[in-house]
Image 1 (cartoon, rainbow, N blue to C red):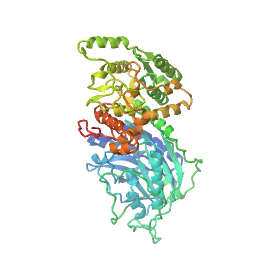
Image 2: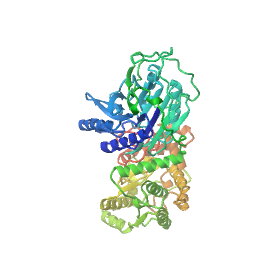
Image 3: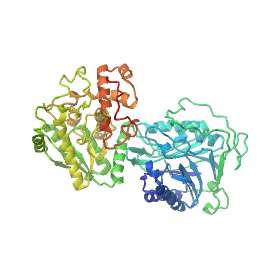
Image 4: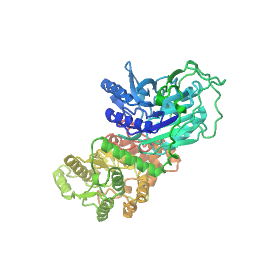
Length: 639
């Protein structure tokens, strides 16, 4: 069997565009002699379509476009992900198209309902007890979550249905290291079931999610025999020798046989992949008959029998599995792909970024240029009376090195006008008081601030003048966005967003937050990695070595309000991503008062994060879709 895996980049709701993309890949696969071509989960509608699935018209249009798409799949078998609305019972489904006709539908059995997934809201599960006979070979089709569970539908298909090729169509969102997790799991499944496992994954950005492709094929002994590119569309074509389905006693499986459970092969160390279980998911039960659908290949390529897969084919060019990127490189590629697709899929051409001369805005500018091209990125320097000369020259150097346009709008006069307008209202209040005035090397003086009084935001009178500057800058960027149709990219990182070290309607103002899921320490890793790529050294060394500062008051440093980032980021990782409590984090070796202070900041700033722009998900638990806490909430460990 010559199998093609088409990892494509669809757009949610673009049924015509997605169909055209599928038809194009069908033609390419057919030209290469493929017998079967498989597309990712919900490739026709895009993933995730979310509440579009509640619209009757959307589901009807999906079915109409599936019929049009199927008509183009002549001389080949195509497996296409689509939302199946059968008798108003919606399923996450795979359509099996044979020579232009729909001959079968498989419905996803295990519906994930954790993290970024919410499929129980929309879909009814299938039972997973279905095998297709294609050219005499038993083929099990499953969808994403179905294969993450050892006892899921692929086991039933292989052990009871005799399937020796298991095709899993998927839309598996990226987080750092996810490709390795998938590879371990898929290799284990191939060994568990003694079957070839072919996995085709979506690629592209969709709002905050990025899909990284990296489709894979594993031999029955767990060897990786094919792998697609990361973060780009690809068509993986390979020849497979598939045994005909057999009962354990050696008898060929007929159309009405239900095959008893066979002996599992012995396990190897590391076979069990770690994965989150779907809440409330139940695996298919043994005992019921397997439904078998014979997909005839009679008449293909002028043959009169079902021996099409044995007919001679032109040889395929040698293609070793694509080498995976290293950790920092793949994160950077994910940021670039997520930014590119968000900008372009939402109809924008150019973006605008506030260039402060700091590392966050420099990295954001690099990602934007690599995603969109230098001609589509505009930088704006907005110096205040507190901006250092070095920050201005650093912003100019970044813009020059990247080849982007740099505009400059000084905000001193605007700030003075604001303060004059508010002079009477602010009478008797001290300006620019600091949250912490002790030596930056000591963490002991850090104290949890009063409720709704946090760094650079909240009800505190101590930071009002600082925030006015940030809001002036946000206002100017939005004015440029309105006038020229540019999308504003914000430049805040995950560390700042976690503790509220950012300003509502100021530096948080914008349409897309490129690095919102990147901790500050990782920002520096990415910046240095980018400096090692061509063109090299686009971020000046002075940007990478200066002490971080918002520059909203004289001699301000981030450590005036926060622990140093090498201390802060591990605490945030433990509290936000691992849900560890105060005592657990202190047990990791951190100062109790510092941990209590950081936890208090995180808890008090949920209201800010709810108003933040969407941004690329990089970590296993990002703010927004992954981590959902009530804003009005009196539970805290920081008191």
